[in-house]
Length: 286
Figure (tube, rainbow, N blue to C red):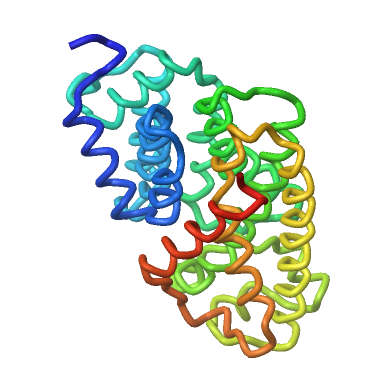
């Protein structure tokens, strides 16, 4: 078995991990060429592992230790079972085969240290920085796996990632509020006369709604720009950005006046697949 091929069991583990914990991204890989799918799933599995650390620990220190393990692995200083970790093995294979930037993968880990604490997201600029090194980075990795790295594609990945990331922040509001964690920028809330405790109370108020409407408008602005840039992107890279179709659907729902941001919205897997399939057949993504 060659180092290029890796271990099929590791690949299957990553696919199952992403399918279970991040179905939207998993489903989007079904529409890219098979040669790219495995590397995308490795990156997405890595993202699942990093993103779930907060859920798996009760205190920040064990979480910091788990994140450090991944940082050490990327730096080639791995210890404690790196060779037996299927996600680490598949990620290393993807890095080697597609020349993924290790430094940016490390920044993704660094940004998720914020998740371990209950400090509020201070400003819109801070939120954009967080999303740039998480959601935007994942789209950039996907473009690299598809064989396209350029300033124009990076510009597209940034706007697409910001639209997707902000939508995810709003979608996660019920869970975050229940554990007194705030990703909606505090400065934005305060500009509308809203405080953290209003969010943590889990009830929509006119002031909170005004703040969320502004955040949704920001996301939709990035979405509009992303679709304009997508029209000029190389055809081979467009389906990497299929998750934009899910972000568009979610933001439309979130903008409705009767939408309660504290009621969790769970889309069926069938609806997710249907949304992505329709988008994949459209002129926007082909």
